[in-house]
Structure formats: C-alpha cells, structure tokens
Image (cartoon, rainbow, N blue to C red):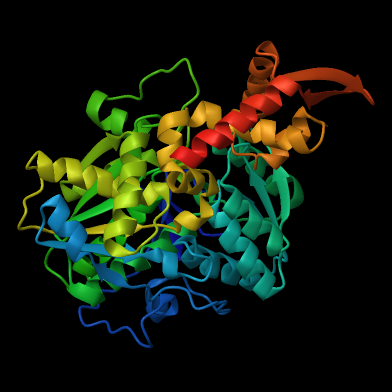
Length: 465
C-alpha cells in the first residue's frame, strides 16, 4: 500500500500515516492497486467488509455490523421535488447511526495491526461517536478532542462509550490542530478524518454499495465540511469504472451552508470570501472555517462534471421536516442540506425531472438535539424566536436554583459559545429579569419576581399556540 500526492504524484510509504505531501503540501490518498482486474467479484453479504480486497491490507477485522445500509427509493419526496427517480443512501442505519462507522471499522482494525492501543481524534461529532464505540469493542483507548460547538447527542454517545473527551477551540479547525500536536507528542494513532487518508478508503464503500443496489445514478449529492466525504464517494465510483464494472460515473454535487462555504466560494470565485465574523451554521457536522480537504472536493466535482452550491439554514431545517414527513427518515441537518440543494437545482432545471439522483444521508437527526428542539417546537419558535427560546431556558433553570454562567452553559447543552450565554445573561439583567451577585469567588444569578412573571407569561402563551 502506497500514498500518492494528487498534485505532484510523489509517493510515500503508508507508515507513518500522513495527510500532506512533503514536497508540495498537496493532499495524499491511498494508491489502490487495481491490477487491471476487470472481473473482480466481491464476496460476503452486503456490508463494509464485503469490499475488503478494495481496501488497504488488513489482518484484523473489527466490526459492529457497519455498511449494507438501505438505498431508500424516496417516491413521495421525489414527486414533491419534481423528480421521477430519487434515492436516499440511509447511513443512519449504521451501528452508531452515521456513515463514520465505516471509517471507525477500518481505523481501529489498522491501529491494532500496527500495534497501537490508543487513538486520538479531533471531531465535531459523528467520527468521535463512531471511534468511541469501535474502540470500546476492540479494547482500545479513545481520546477525542471536540470544539465548543458540538451536537450534544453525539457527545452523549462518546461519553457512554467511555471515550476520554477534551474540549479545545471554538471550531473543529482548532481541535484538529490540537489532535495533530498530541499525536506527535504521545505517539498515539492519528484517527482524525482530515489527517488519516484511510478514512477516504473506508467511505468509498458507500459508492460500491449504491452501485450494487441500483447501478450508477446520474447525479450524486453530498454535504461538504472538510471535503473528504465527497471525494470518498467520487473515488469509489471512479474505481468501479476503472475495474470495468461500469461504463459511467455520476455527476457529483457538493453542498455547503451559506454560513461556511469555503469550497463553493473557491469554485465560484477562485478563493474563499474573507469574513470578519466566525462562520456559523446549525448543521454542526459540516461547520468548518478552512476545508482542509477542499482540493479533493474540488477535484471530485470538476472531474465528474458536477456542481457546488450553498443553501441557507432555514432551507436546511425546512427540508429536514420535509424528509421526515414524506419518507419517515430523520436526517441530520448536514444531510438535509443536500436535498435542499437538489430542490433548487430541479427548480432551476439544472437537474432534469427524468434524471436519476442519489443523496447521501450521513447521520441521524436524533443526534442534533439543538435542531431537534427547533423542529419539535417550530410553531412556538416562529412566534417567540430562537433568542427568546434560549432566554426562556435560562429563566427556567434559574427558577429552580441560583447558579453561575459556566454551569448554565453546561445545562443548556453546550450548544452555543459561553460568550453567547453571558450575552443572554447581560440582556436579562438589563431588563430586570435576573440579578447577579458574588458567591465563592463566582458570579451567581438569581431570577427576580419580574422574571418569574415573564416566564409565566411565556408558558401561558404556549398554551394558546
């Protein structure tokens, strides 16, 4: 097995694992030895390890039953959008409810083959949950570094699987830098998706499965954060063509939220737009300042003759509801972004109603508790607004007991920055709804009588909605 730079073609041994070329800093990928096998046959039931001969050599096979996920024909959703043929690759059916279980299976297997007993991973959710579960199964120690903004449902999975969790940085970019430094210092196995090229190898099996389940669609939609996932899918289809198993490949469409769209802007403008404010989206799985694998994503989109576009958070949330209502599938926000983009392209006639389309559903919406709350209380939220909803939560907590800012942040589920919590506290104090006081070298807050009356008024209003 060899690593090859996609820019200059320079090759490196696979160990020690690295993500960037020492010569030109281009991204490295595993060079798959296809050996001209035009009649390769996969063996075993439909699942991740069915494609073992297309993966890097592995002696140990760690598995929780990943892969073999349904390719759901979305008839009602297709009709609503204006398509004849729409498929959803439902990766929520994996053991920890996301596509990252494929990567976790290969990474933990590789770590054991190489003699490691500890993994380090920077994650904004799904990969950390997956690695924690697979490490528990394999008897490995899993260290995860998470940013301040992370879905609480995914954090809960990491905790229950007994991962060692450290919070570092505002966004995943900061956590990745920390994980890189920790791996160098400790010698632990580097399992961060952006720093380990085996992740792409694991995730390309999604394309293999789609091919075996219905053939090659004309379009394939993928949400983009760092950019590695979309390249994984493209590499899988490209290898199937190189093997002579198919004569065509799909056009790949990459989708990002408007609040963090570095890859899309690079394609459309030649470079990312400089922003004074931090990027933001409720689709935390794809919230990233600098898409570290953006070159790979752009390569996939351009080689396939595909497209890249953005959607708003409002479009994402609306689509999440639509998918659930029409197909009974609860997708995480990142996945909903892809279908929101598909709706746009069909409306603009860039995707024809007669063309076949597949969309990747990366993970379950049950993991994104902040969005779950927004969806289940959508009617109330429309009246009260998210700002008031957060302030209501703070007042509810303080109506039970006095507490301080950091404790409030934890009780709110760590779904916003601590700075945002203190901003809410200052605004509530300014309106006379709470008061602050010093206790044990900390600033505690207490709800006032006026605050209790406002909280009761909000509760009364909810009854009418």
